[in-house]
Amino acid sequence: RDAKAKAKYEPEAFRDSIFQLIENVDPTDDSKFTSVLDTAGNTLDYRRYGDSFFELFVTGGLIAPGGIINYDEEYGKFPFSLFVLASGDDPLAGAKRWGGLIVKLTRRYKYLERMFAESTEHILKHIHRYTEDENKMLAIGVGVLVTDAFLTLEPLKALQEDHLTKDGLALRFLTDMLRVFLMNNDINQLHKSLVRAKVGRLTEFFPPNKRDEDCFARHFEAEDMPVLIELHTATLTLARRNEFVDEVSSILRDAKEEDIDDDEEAEQIQATNLKVARAAKAAMRANKWEQHDTVSLAWDGIMNAVNWSYKSEQFEAQALVQIKRHSPVLEMLTTEPKSEISLLKHVQLYAYNEPRLTKYFGRIVLELYNTDVLSDSAIIFWATKGAKPEGKSGFLKQTEALVRKLEAMEDEDDSEDEE
Figure 1 (spheres, rainbow, N blue to C red):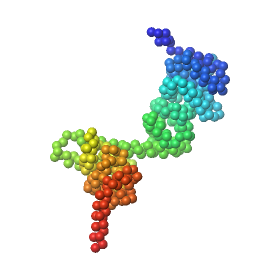
Figure 2 (cartoon, helix red, strand yellow; figure 1 turned 180 degrees about the vertical axis):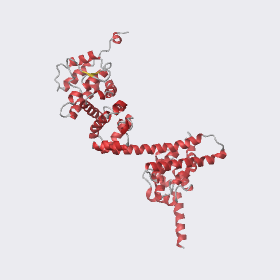
Figure 3 (cartoon, helix red, strand yellow; figure 1 turned 60 degrees about the vertical axis):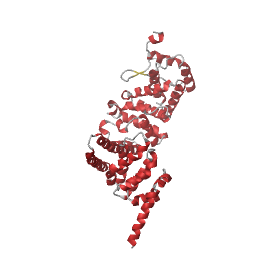
Figure 4 (cartoon, helix red, strand yellow; figure 1 turned 45 degrees about the horizontal axis):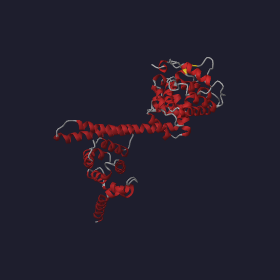
């Protein structure tokens, strides 16, 4: 083995080397500080001691097993660390200064960016060992770097451990961090960041016995952060909608996998539709959904259950067969004019966003009419007043003949009534 491979791992010696390098640097001279450490990367093994490097930069010392911070006996706290720079009267200003140093130091050594994210997760695992003020400074520092898009929210998953959530430490940290993030970002950006980092629901940072909607709302109302309540409500609504769509698809797929004779197929389809109808009614009761909300979700579940062929010429037949089989479900959810229009608008958007079905929209509408899901008045209203902008001209052209026919039938009925 070469000498480097045989070298001992000595984080304390690395720490001492850093202190010695900046011994004559004025604590207010950020440019001199970054220049010295930038040059030192040629001799100090930043790659090997990345964790120690960032522990020093965040806490001012090295984190011992168990989470206790060990400070250098001779030099004390690292003067350019977050826990020093953000400890003044303006923690946010200090954290922003510290964040600027982190960005500058990792600009040359790009591998340090990845190492910083990993080190941050390690540091967050020990917030139960830090003081309340240190945790606040850490939350603000993380918030600054996430705001600057230098760091993702992924390290926050380290806070979802039971020993950090049970006493509210994780929630306090999350709240302080989000307050900083929302100073310069809106709720949509936060939602995208949470999804991208796969953090999960914010309730997972709450103590286990306080993860209900009421506790969530009370906490962020007290913190004067109502946008988080709005986000949580919207996220829950979307999750419940997706769960219902998945439930419908699952029911239909499970039925297809059953080995039955052709003679029993009609009975199986009827039983399957009944099962989906019950699921729809249960979802409406549980979520207080209206019929027009539910029918679009049922449509998505029905179409998601199609095992689409690799042959494009079969798409139309597959879609029409699926509609015909499960039209009783859609018919049950379109007993009101508002529900019919809602479904037709949704089908328009679905066909617009689903290339397999775009050119078959007219045939789909005709099938929905033939199976008594859509009435002639609903289709005429959609064509004359209710169509959405997406693909409108093409879809109106596809349904032009049907609409003319329905309008003629309507005129005939009016004439008969007058006679």
